[in-house]
Image 1 (tube, one colour):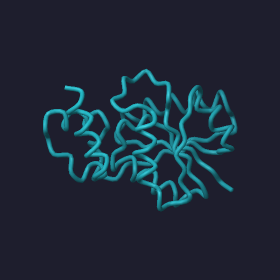
Image 2 (cartoon, one colour):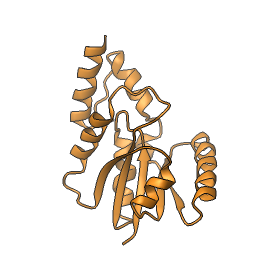
Image 3 (cartoon, one colour):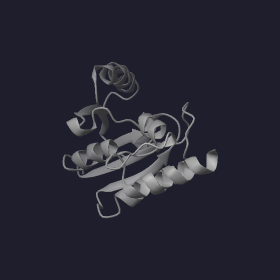
Length: 161
């Protein structure tokens, strides 16, 4: 079985993330969406909330599983018996950063490959940070995140003001 891991913070999950995960699911037998627990990012949603929001998106797709992880991604990939890391790329600036990460991961785990998937043109501008900023200012995020994610985001932002 060819298993791949798609890691991230997913704070919150966007339609761009879902696009990458769904496309990766067509390439591999199993996709583990690894939700990073310990991150330098100051997340709006806690780990359990991020996992729940992701799981709700993939409940109909049995080849995708959502799991938290802590520590090095290469260690988590090894624990999960994954052969590949999936990374989404929106722009050249993403590639430069992701390229450095992939080289470090290759140094730490020589048998682990990284596959870059270009984002769909519909989501080139989309990031979790942009979604949080637009929604915090009352902007419309319809079509950019799943409906339940938008509801959770608006509720969370209303409660943090």
